[in-house]
Image (tube, one colour):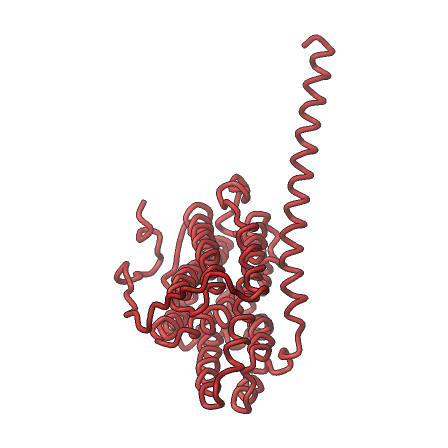
Length: 369
C-alpha cells in the first residue's frame, strides 16, 4: 500500500524541494577538536540501536484509542459536539488526533535528518561534522519508527502542518551555517522533546511509551550538541548578529505555538475552521500543554546566549518567561535514565520468562513427559 493512500487529507505533491544555500565547508585539520563534542560523538556511536529489535512491535494498539490518554486532552471534550458524538465517533476522533500528532513528529524527524545532514556539510569544525553524522542516523531511525507506528498501528497519516513546514523552510533556506542548529536543535527538537515527554508520561499504552522513551534518549544528546556548538559560536558574534538570531527564535516560537492547535482534525468532523480554532483556544489542557512545550526551548535559548530585551518580552507574552531558569541538564538526564530503566525492566521480564520456560521443560522431563 502506498503511503499516499493512508493520508486523510491530500498532502499535495509527494516531493517538497527547498533550494539549498550556503557553502559546503571542508577542513584539513583532523587532530584537534573540542573534548566535549568528541565525547558526545563517542556517546552517539555507543548508543546506536536498531528500531526493528529494540522496540516490541508485537504489542497491540487499539486504533480507536492508540494512546490511552484522558479524553480531557481532546479540545472537543466538554463541548456540545462531544455530547452528541457516539462512542464510535469518539474513537475516530482519538485515532485521528493521535495520527495528527505522530504525523507531525514524523515530518519533523525527516526535517531533523535533513538539517543534521546539512550541518555535516556546512559546519566549519570536524568535531561538529562527526557528531552530526551520528545524529543524521538517529533521525533516520526516528522517522522509520514513527512511519511504522502510523502505518501499522494507527492506519492513517496527516500532511505536514503549515507552520511546521514554514519553520523548516526558513531553517533550511538560510545560508548561515548555524541556522540549522538553531532552527532544528533548539526550536523544533526542543519543542518535540516536550511533546514527546507529555505523551510518554501520560499514555497507558506500552508501545507508544517505548517509542517515545527511546527516541527521547537520543534527542537528549542532540539538544546537548546544539547547546555546546551554538554557545561557543555565539560568544563571537556582534550584538547585531545576535539580535538577528533572536528575531528568528521569536518568529519560530510563535509559529510553533500556533501549530499546536490540531484544528485540521476538528475540520474532518465538519467543524468550521473559526469554530475549531475557538474550541482549541478554550481548552485548559491545551493551555497547559503549550506552556510545557516551551520547557526545553526557553532555558536552552538563554543558555546559548540569546536573551535580549525583545526576546524576553516575547517570552513574557507567551507566558513562558519563568522557564528560563529550568534545569535543562536534569531534564535531559531524566530522559536518558527513563529509557535505560525501561530496558532493564524489559530484559528482566524476558529473563524471568526464559527461566520459567526452562524450569517447566526440566519439570516435564523429570516427569517423563
